[in-house]
Length: 291
Ligand SMILES: Nc1ncnc2c1ncn2[C@@H]1O[C@H](COP(=O)(O)OP(=O)(O)OP(=O)(O)O)[C@@H](O)[C@H]1O
Image 1: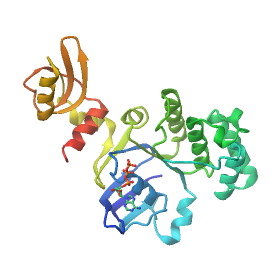
Image 2 (image 1 turned 90 degrees about the vertical axis):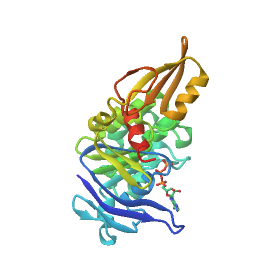
Image 3 (image 1 turned 90 degrees about the horizontal axis):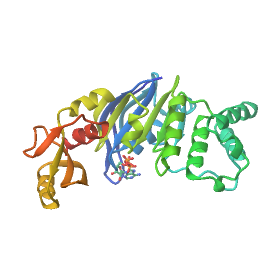
Image 4 (image 1 turned 60 degrees about the vertical axis):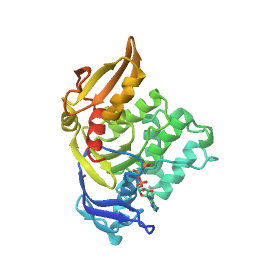
């Protein structure tokens, strides 16, 4: 399954242009979506789930055009885990999923089979009788993932699935997404660069309503190679001077002063050495070029 977005624009009634003539291809597998607050990620996901009609431009899903007449067909192919998910607090996990499956039009017997399968896959089987309000944040997120999968979607869209979770739960959700991405397309939107580094090969960077980059993780990281430096300064005053001149991505006290991680096209005039770029460095490098 692949998704093509062509010259997409979303303008709200208040005049805000959330997506501005954007073009993107989303191929099979896990595809990461990175972008600062307000970049337009949620708006894009709302368009892709058919909740929001774009102002102009086209979207196709395996050559099916997003148009009023096709929305139902498209919705059947999509699963969505929104950023905020508060599923019926007084229902048990099992009841909640049966109800969600019913809403998604999954036949009852088939729905029970799928719930059984996905509860096991998400290590939630032993919690099926608990009420939703009794679950931890990570468990709720996993139930959210199961509900998004009940219609066996070919295209799964997940919005910030790991926000607020402890490291163990984050790793668990990431691994689940990798498992689920087999034979599917998964759009994984997050602010957590580390999560994408651990799960995707391909990603897009969204900035002020358009895409600054779309392609492989490897090529993105390549763009920042040779531009990342570790520099040492004696004190906070000197660190502030450097901060005014360069983009600093981290700062920590070390013996004899402060160590700064600096992004610069050329070697800064400081005691420093070049180090390999990470995905986070590359993300900041690319977005900084458009500031
Ligand atoms: N319903 C709306 N009406 C008016 N403006 C909106 C609406 N929804 C979003 N916006 C604006 O559109 C822009 C993009 O918002 P969007 O929620 O898509 O960004 P985002 O990348 O998902 O941000 P975040 O990472 O904070 O969730 C923002 O300027 C936002 O204020």
